[in-house]
Each structure stands twice: as C-alpha cells, then as structure tokens.
Length: 347
Image (cartoon, rainbow, N blue to C red; front, side, top):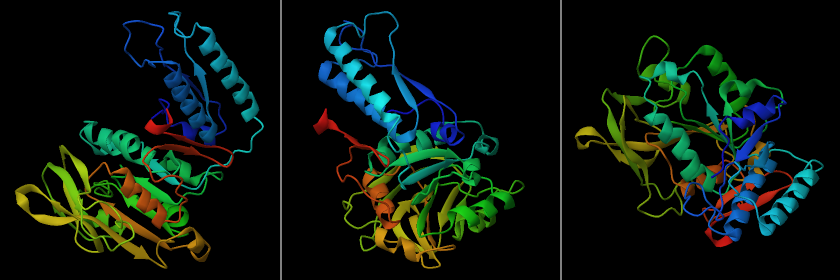
C-alpha cells in the first residue's frame, strides 16, 4: 500500500499541491534489499500503482534517485518516459472523489491518551494497510475539521478510529454532516469515552447511540463474526476473527443493538464484539436506495477490536450503498476518471 507521510486528502481539499517521493530502489543495486523492486515487471507494477494512487487522490508522485544508479538503464528510462507522458495527460482528466470510505482522524486524540501510539498503529495504520486498502472500495483519510469544509466530498462509510473525546461542537457537526443519507458510521473501540472531565459510558452513549458496560482494565481485543443473517456479516467465512493481541483499555462493550459478533474479554466473559443500530430509515442497504435517505437516516456500528478484515469492510461499504469494485482483496484505487487494481495476479 502506497500512502504519503501526511494526511494528503486534507491538504488537497485546501487547494495545496502535494509531492510524494517514490522511494523504490531497483534490481540494479546488488545487495540492497531495502524497498527494492526485484525486476522490471515488478518496478512497473509498483510505480504504476503509486501513480494511480496519486491520480485518484489528487497528489503528485515523482521517481527518486539518490545517485546510486537505481534508474539507469534503457528499459527503466522508457518506463519513466511513458509514465511522465501519462502524468501530463492526467492534468486534463476530470477528477472527482468516488463516494467510498472516509477515515476521519481526530488530531487532538493524543491529549486523551497516555502517549503510547500502539493503539493508533492498530486502529489507523494497520486498519488502512490490511483491511481498508484491500476491501475493493475507494477510501480517503481526513481530519475531523475537514468535515466542515464546503468541498468535503460525499462518502458512504465514515470510520472514526480515535474520536475519544466528545464535545457539543463535534456532536453538532456529526448530526449535520455525517448522520444522514443512509451512511454507515463505524466507531472505533474507545469512541466517546471522555467528555473532557469524566471517563465513562455516558459520553460514549451520547456519541454512538449504544448503551455500554465498561471494564476498567487493559485487555487484548478480538471478536468472532456470529450473525450470518445480517448483510454486514453475510457471506463471511465462519471463522472470521477481527482484532489483535494488543492490550489496551478501558474496554467499552455494547449491551444493545443488533449483535453482529461475539467477543471474549478479561476473565473469559462473553460480550458483544460488534453491534449495529439503525436510525431513521437506516442504512441505504444498496446504491438504489440512497436517494430515499436524508437527514437522520444512518446506521451506527460499534467495534470493540481493530483491525477488521477486508471482507468485513467490503460488506459494511456495500450495506451503506457504496460501489464495490473488486471482491478479491486486491488494492483498488478509483475516482471519476481512473480505476486501478493492483494485486498478486496483476504484477
């Protein structure tokens, strides 16, 4: 997965130009195994993948050469020449973000934690690389403040991995911009656990709509898909398990809603691992019914563990009415003009 070292979608929304280096070394450097493409075919696949990511999300990638001869043969230069031509052509293409999955980062969340970034690595980095990028649906990463921008694009799923502290201002933004049009809102494990004064279930309930039990310990998180009748879980393998051995807390465990998955927590107690609630007319269910949804029509899904497998994200997106481009867990990039699929079978 190719991702710039910044929240590039937020930068593009603000009309800025963003350049991202493709630090891909090549087979021309014997003994250097760092980020090295093993042959011409793999180099082409990697760099075309990187360029497609930039085309669909509005930033520019460039080839990187430290002077070690990484790119110095005729085949590679011919590849770069063709790619440079396509970059120039892409300026004239019509670009528009495809309604897919939006990961919304609260950039103040570190103030609500102990400073250990392990959870964020699981909930943001691993979630992006292992699940979201391979679910067959376009996705973008934004800051919470981007939601109020006039040019914020439409999306079908909103994932909040780290919205730990609830404020009235944030709640008003969510009600106006997010909780509508049949979308599915996915809440990470600690969503709403703080109101700025108290750690507990009341602010979490106000944010997500769920009632909770809170266990005040650090504990590993995993859940097992258990409700095969619900569209979000339908068709998943019976052994679909989400989560990791990472221990963190306190643990918020939903006690109402439609239970989609079971979890086992500290002491072997059985709880809901994932639950969903419908509001208004609920989630769109499919693309055709989006037009029948409006303000206050959405589904709220709470997860007790991260990361989620790609197939589960794909089902969530489909239930929200997103177009699914691929069922094969390959990396997909798409906007109004470009669809690119990169996977093992395509290298």
